[in-house]
Length: 68
Image (cartoon, rainbow, N blue to C red; front, side, top):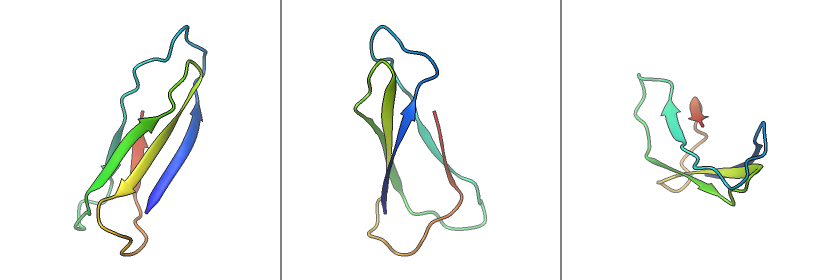
């Protein structure tokens, strides 16, 4: 699974800001596959958050939330 989402910043910065992101699996009762999370194309007004699970697609994964 690979997913990318464009996020628009609430205000425009003079330069591209440093963006920190993390992924959180909400369900503690299930085993979790590893995931990679990164930021692409950060500008002064927007950026993409990209998420990919480490293992090739092995079913739909739910309850993964990304926090910026």
